[in-house]
Image 1 (cartoon, rainbow, N blue to C red):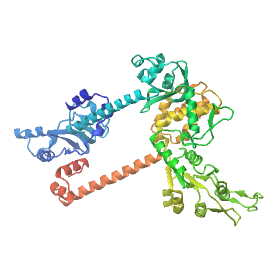
Image 2 (image 1 turned 90 degrees about the horizontal axis):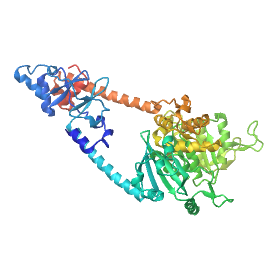
Image 3 (image 1 turned 180 degrees about the vertical axis):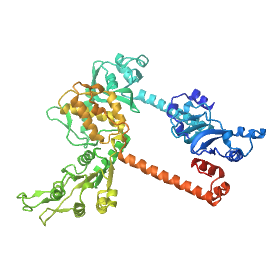
Image 4 (image 1 turned 90 degrees about the vertical axis):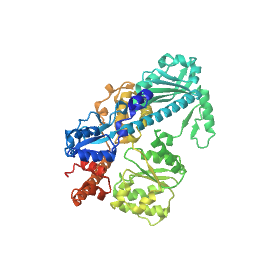
Length: 602
């Protein structure tokens, strides 16, 4: 009755995201199928339940109801008979993925699909708590909708939202006034029947955002955003925004930006109405607006305003060098050089001369005037040591000395040269683990580890995929000097399902292959080589698998320890369960539960 009330009063607005696993009560008393009716009655008194599950070697095989135990009063059974005589086959048994909205009565027992191991139970208490949770969520949803409605109507920009079929669902007053169509007439119609020259239907087809695009509407040139709406990897709609009403408004913004010292804009001398960005890497050039990447950029921005050493960590291909460039270009050392060294790519015997340089005649084949090393070249700027985890121990000691003394000596020279640079290092390895293995100097680590910056892998920010795809395809069009190409949203959905072990670098490679191997301006699944779409949907990173293995090992050890303690207590008390429970510091009902769970032969 409670479940029916929930569905009638609240409906399935939020309800369809709750499974029984979310409300599972795993603190459940069980009965062993070889218990006597008397033993079961004692447990019923302790737990105050009217129905308990019966277990046989860990498997859930049925239930015992309190009312059935009273059949012994009719002399049909004795108190010493086994409870399996009274057992009822379970009819209210579900899996963890079952929706709470489907529950008609309680208790409901949750079991594993193959082993039939009992995972927990949902009783009336859990169902009532679930109802209260839904009511709270519904009220929050209503409040959110009220704020959204106010925001849409107050917004200066015109806003139009369509569903996946292109039907207008939201149309604010600003948009209504601009196109001269009332909200009532617009809502419920296809966007192309209301908005002149709209490309919202194209965005629904591609799933890729179109930001700051020119659009002619009602005889006026506008700048618009067209953004896809994704939910759980599925394209469910799109939103169109009128950002600037006419190019004159854009010019006004540019003029205001010119007044800001750190805006980074420079106007071309030959055209007062055109502008361009310089070639520096900015933090906004790092694609992504998800919370994790935004927080990473926030830390990097703060680091750029200091000369402190920065240690960038992250998996291969996440974009560590791009972050390093942005820290330099947007930081207080931006007037100096950005010098990059890949420690893993230079042979050990050449690394010293590459970093420190060499004096005239230092070795056979040396330049007549010697050569500056990377430390000297980075003077006044930034030195970026990539893959520093692969640096030999001997070289680590020499770099540590440079960081301490801020002086270098070229190979073959005794003259010290002062150097002043910001150091940024990067690695995809666990330096603390290397320290423990004796492969990395601890004193150097703490010199590098002043401002740590971890870049999240792409699989942890898949919501950034649409904007990354959009901007990258636009860049490829410029590189190859061809028309811009769009990508079908089905391909994007496939990308959502993939874990991207190669991260951003792998994504860029895949997009470039798609771009150059497709002749049409719209890339579809049928035009795409199967090798590109042959993603492993079940891919998991090595780190994730190792953590799961470690977690399982810990759990198995804990279970074994608890089982051994119970066996020892029963052995010491000669099988007396009451005494064993006291020895273990648990109730007798809990002891029976654990004996049943571990299938102990007592």
